Length: 136
Image (cartoon, rainbow, N blue to C red; front, side):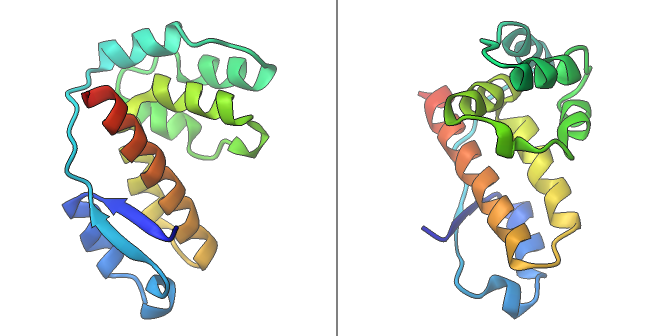
C-alpha cells in the first residue's frame, strides 16, 4: 500500500514536493480526530509496558517532556528499527497521535529521497491506526 494519510496542512507540504518524490503515492485526508492532552500522554508513557531495554530507553527519553512537541523532538532521531512490532505499537500508543503528527511535520522538513516519503507514510499509517482505535 502506497498511501499517505495526511492532514490538510501536511497535504500542502506533500504537494510542494517534487513530482519524482510524489510518484507512486496516493494521499488520503486524515479526518479522524482525538482530543489528547499532555497529561494523558504522560500517563500513557508512565504506564508503558516496558519489555526491552529499547522501550525502557524510549520511555526514559519521553518522560517528563511537558509537551507533545518536546516528546517528538526527544525521539526524532531515535532508530526505531530495533523495535519489535509489539514494542512499536506500545511506544506509539504511549506517545499518542499528536506526538506522531509532530514527528511527521519534522520529517517533512528533511524530505530528500523516496525513503523519506516511505518514513512519512509509515508514521501516517501508525497515526491513522491510533486515531481509529482511540476515537472509538
